[in-house]
Each structure stands twice: as C-alpha cells, then as structure tokens.
Image 1 (cartoon, rainbow, N blue to C red):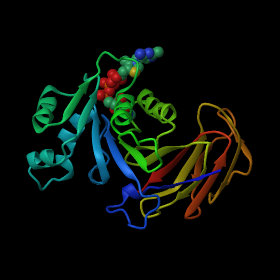
Image 2 (image 1 turned 90 degrees about the vertical axis):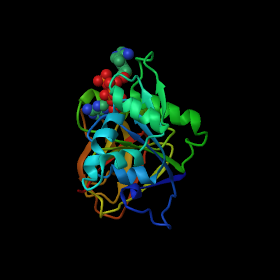
Image 3 (image 1 turned 180 degrees about the vertical axis):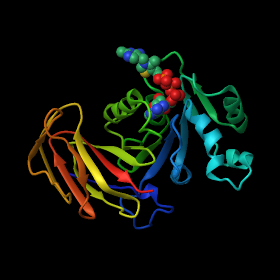
Image 4 (image 1 turned 120 degrees about the vertical axis):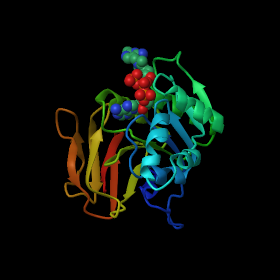
Length: 256
Ligand SMILES: Nc1ncnc2c1ncn2[C@@H]1O[C@H](COP(=O)(O)OP(=O)(O)OP(=O)(O)O)[C@@H](O)[C@H]1O
Ligand SMILES: Cc1ncc(C[n+]2csc(CCO)c2C)c(N)n1
C-alpha cells in the first residue's frame, strides 16, 4: 500500500525547500474569529476564498493583526479571490468593498442543503482540475470551536471530499482525514504543534488500527464510539505512522 506523508509546514513562516511533500495550497476562511496565523496561511496559498461571512472576518479582523498599519492598506493587501456561499452573513458594505477590488462573488442562496464550506470546496474542485492530486491541499481557517453543528458540518466535509487533502484549523488544533487507502507518515513539527493528539474513527468503527510514535500506540486495536477512541494521546517521536482498515481523523494541538 502507498504511503501518504503529512507535515504542518504551512504553520511555518517559510516552507523549507527540502520539505516533502511539496504542496500547493488553497485557503478557505470561515465565519469564525481568525486564527492569529491566518496571514501566514494566506501567504502560502495560491488561491484564497471566503465562505460567506468569512469575508466579514477578513475585513474586520485582518487589520487587528497589523495594529501599526492603516486598516485600509491591510484590507487592500488581503483581497480574497472568491467569496462564495448563501450570502446571508456577509455585510453589504463588505461585499461592495471586495467587489470593487475585483473579487469574484458567487451567490448560491438557492442551495440550502450544503454548507458554505462545502460550496467553497466544490468551487475549488470546479476551477482546479488537479485538486484531487496528492500535491494539492486545502487549508480551512476557523473551522473548529464555536457552534457544534457547524463543527460537525465542517468535519462532514472531510468525509464528503475524502479524495482531497483538507486540513481544518482553529487557533489551537488541526484535524485532517487519514484515508484507509494509504499508510500514513505524519512528520511532527514540534516547534508549532503537539504534543496532544488524537485518532478518531469517523462514520464507522475501525476493527484494526496500528500506530507507532505515540505514548499510547494502537496495536491491531479496535476503535469505536461507545468503546475506545484515542483522545488525549501524546506524540512521542518525530514521525508517527498510522495504518487502519477505516478512515480516521487525525488531530493535533497547535502551540501558541
Ligand atoms: N461557530 C462556527 N464554528 C465552526 N464553523 C463555523 C462557525 N460559524 C461559521 N462557520 C463556518 O463558516 C461558514 C460560513 O459561515 P456563515 O455564518 O456565513 O454560515 P451560515 O450559512 O450563515 O450559517 P448558519 O445559517 O447555519 O448560521 C459555515 O458554512 C461554516 O463552515
Ligand atoms: C436535513 C436538513 N437539515 C438541515 C438543513 C439546513 N441546512 C443545511 S446546510 C444549510 C445552508 C447553510 O448555509 C442549511 C440551511 C437541510 N437543508 N436539510
């Protein structure tokens, strides 16, 4: 089985040249308080989208992250490529501001069956033919914490688009899906992440998961909700390996 490599190098100010795998990033900003490292993610990304009210966050909160600069300069510098959603949360003046700067806006208010995050991922899929390839990765800022139904909706997007690398981020943790189709090697950047971590079966139990590099490794272990799920685990080595018969969520704490 092929190995899929993972590192959180998007949390570093500059991505090391020898970094493997070398990924191309897109960023989606959600309608939650911006993590402090959002400008970093923005600079790494080739494509930047706001999900509906996420545009208010860029408009209101990016200037707060640069207190010594004129807010207008900051807003002009951080211009999203696309704003997409059902457009019930973006404020009129924010929409007008970014339209004037040339941002593409897509109003999908007729679709009340998928979330704004889902709409943004589907949009990236439409305009980026190679996004399912393993060298693409979509970063989602503001996906965790806040309303529980939104969090679960965001996690459901990981399952719905399980063929695309997607990383859900908040100020203090990240979540990604480890598909059962691969063995996984997670290269830990201990300056920015860990040591707290978790491995969680999603959608169905896992009959068989084996890991190395954790304080409480799994050894052909069964995990299921109502039984064992691996929360409050601790990263012990620089490389974590995971193999499982089911898709799992990997989560690790982000240092501040
Ligand atoms: N509190 C939150 N926690 C996690 N994600 C959130 C939260 N609030 C918004 N989001 C994410 O940001 C996206 C855009 O948010 P927005 O508030 O514009 O959505 P919405 O469609 O108006 O939500 P709703 O109608 O359910 O309140 C959502 O689709 C969701 O993915
Ligand atoms: C069974 C079911 N539950 C909830 C919704 C509502 N909903 C889900 S996504 C969405 C859009 C949010 O921007 C809305 C309103 C639905 N349609 N179907």
